[in-house]
Image (cartoon, rainbow, N blue to C red; front, side, top):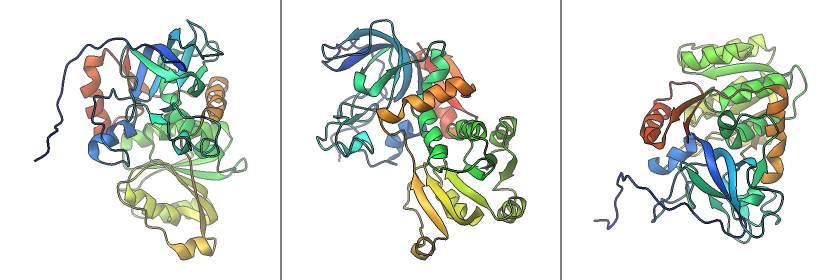
Length: 336
């Protein structure tokens, strides 16, 4: 019998003191990401923490105190930060993702260090940025994981204007990816099993929409209407079925972009890759060096996250249940 257990607790805890490299942020909004829930589901390589850890890795707020090493930030600055703090941000591993830091000091907010579903939270200043003037704090919060990831999942495909890109999974990341793709003058195929998600996708400019659960021949329809298939398919769903079907809608040497994290290993046919039937790439929220571009792009092109907000941390269970249902569009956030 295990000596530990899970429990729901109601706590007020001390406001944290910033370390040497920390910003103390008075949070305006923290938004919930699918990966915040993966720890509870046993659906991640991260092990559940033995100590109490506040969840959440998407936030915006205002700087209220700074550590002694902090440069480039001042009290009162509106800020957001990425999900991994306390890496060195300079080594070969950090140039790919801060979890690969050779010093092994990187910590994930909400997993191995406290996250942002709290009135105040800490973040490494090297992992943070001051927001462009005029950006709304609450609706910007989802951009610091979902937005950055969605942007790079589109841009890394390096497609030409007018090319076809399939967005598979049109929820929290997908509705942002559609907007980014349209702003880059790509033609978008939206694929989902939710009617409400597809209606949202169409309203955001998706050129074609398909319900993969109710349209048996949707792959043939895509190949016909695109004259050969999509140039890239971005899989934002965590479904193994989504990955299994994605190559069937690609044109020869198209890109399978991996973003969603399924529980089971992916079924990859080595011969397909060897013969160039399609290519495999991946995208994530990445590094601080990749953070500013998508945030400023959003500001310039008016990308609008679908964010449903609730006032107060007592609504956290409600938004967890809404995300688990998979039926509601966009993101859910807590306002402080």
